[in-house]
Image 1 (tube, rainbow over the protein chains, first blue to last red):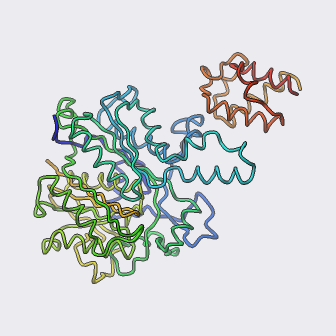
Image 2: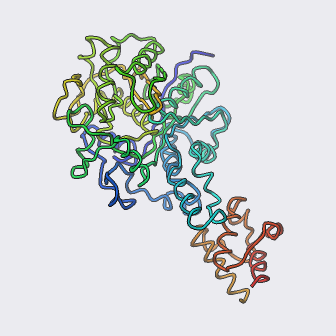
Length: 412
Length: 79
């Protein structure tokens, strides 16, 4: 039973570009930006007034007010994305998925909006007026539990909080769960709705965010010389993963294979990447080895590419260390240029992008890349999508804390 | 306050604050089975009652409250 191949059979997403997979993909290959002025709260006293927000999503309409008001927005989006993924995989969302299905979700900061609301109530009205649902909304495993309840997922569950690597780790751990025969199917995903006035303020304090308030859609410019920080994004993306035998038995579509996973820790600094991306190098090497491949086999890298000075420089150096001269022949892109940084939701979103790039033979671009940086000198697919037959793709995710999660996907 | 008046206020709280369908709310409706108010939801209901009617409700007093009618009667006894 161990060492089974793991396939992806369903995808679902809600993100700043669109509220389903098909429209998201169309936006990505057109090079659209989902970044706008923030509408959900007042930004007049904040250094940053824009983000990638999910648009046109009315939770009351989607799940009814009585259910919606019990959930943090991060869980509402998780359920929405999971429903699309399950239907895409040909599963009946009215039936319980049962004990042979696991769930692994990643999030950076869980229900931070609910945490803030509870603290405000506590300060203004005292302990007896705190929302009794506060704990169930703010705990980081809330989405994992709520999705499991909604769809009857009774196998093992994990919630991974490795910041911006969280849902890359979720996809990797789900792969191992299936590969090792613990379950035949796992729902792997990521979710984040961490854009609040407080988090914008706090990320700004460490100079992590772009302050290009005059041109929000051009603010996220990974690998560009004029990049000045990342852009907050929100959303949820979910992958239905299962053993190849399970997919063949069900006769369902196979998007591609989750072939390799590498995870390492910098153990260096809580925010800064190790010089030269040492931990990232090791994670990429482990992922390629785990897939039974060599560097020559990798065609496309969906980079972490956050648009911060430190990440893009060190990620480029790390790719060069791993691939040597071949680095210059690789197709690389950062789709964060279009979605903003989905934080704990980024790894799952970018896994989806990687698998769709393989399936469709199209590499989505890095938009806003106009002024090359001498320290970022690879082919980042600037501004326009590239049509190309691909057989393998790698997705990089690195998080505050020094967490590195790298995934390798194969078309066949 | 009359029972009818209390019921109307309770009904409005259930519908406006908790998002419960208006046609489900009647004196006989069971809180858990009919209105899907679980143990966490009961705490919300009590908070909403305390704010709306300016009363204090102890956990002990809730033990026997299983229906909307019983909740209305509890409030009636306090007003």
